[in-house]
Length: 311
Image 1: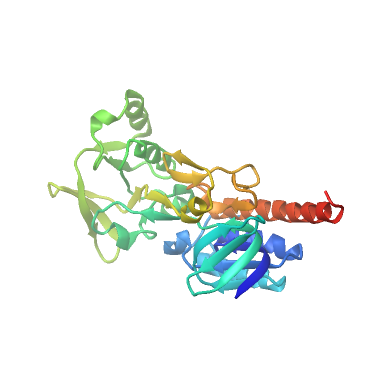
Image 2: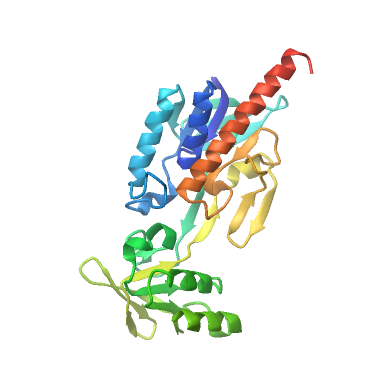
C-alpha cells in the first residue's frame, strides 16, 4: 500500500523539520522520514543559533519534532532507500522498513557524512577536543593551545581562521608538503603567529581523558590541548542522482544545483541544509528549510488554482 501526502520530507534535522513546520502550519499533509543520523550528533552543544546558543543538538531536534506534531505533520523513523518521479510529476519514495509513500513535492534534507582523517585517536575525540568548526566551538576552547591537522593546502585557511580564538596555534602539515604552500600562505601564517611543523601525524596523546599532545611519526610530541581538522564532506546524493537532478562539483563535495529557494533542476524536487552545502550551520539549515517550505506551499497553491480554472 502507498500512503499519499502533499509533501514528503526526507531528513529529520534542522532543515527538514523547519520545512515541515512551515508546511504543517500551511495545512499541508506532510510526512517527515527521519533516519536519525544528524551530522552534529558528536557535539555536546550547538552554538551561534540566536536564542538556542548552547542547546544540546538532541534537545533541539526533540523540540522540533514536538512542534511539527502540533500541526499534524507525521514523522516516521525510517530510511528512504529509493525514489522515482512518475509521469504525473509526483514522487514515490520507498522506505527501508517496506513502506511506500507518495508526495506531490519532495524535499531531500539528507545532509552529509563527515569522513575523518585516518589518524589514531581522532574519531574517539571528535566533537570533544578534536574539532572542525571554530564558529561552533572556538569560544569554548579559546586561548588554549591549538593544533591544526592539514589534509590539503586549504587547511592553511583553517589555521589562519582559528588564530582568532588563540594566539598559540601550530599547523601540522601531515600529508601536505611545505612546497605546496604559496608564498602568500607562508606570509599570512607568519603574520598570524602560526607555527608550521612538517612531518606526518601518527596519533594523539591523551592524558586523563583530555587531549594533551600531537605525536608525529618520528615520535616527537607537541603539547596541544585542542586539534582542529577538516573532515572530508560526503554528501548523501544518492536520491538526487536517482531522480536525475543536476549536480555540481565543488572542492568540498558534490551537491545538487538549486535556485535561491532550494528547487533542484527536477520540478517538484527540493533540497535544504547540508544537502546543498557543507558549511550550513544549524541556523542556516533551518532558514533554508523554512524558505523551501514556504516556496513549496506557494507552488502547490498556484498549481491547484490553475487546475481549477483549466490553465
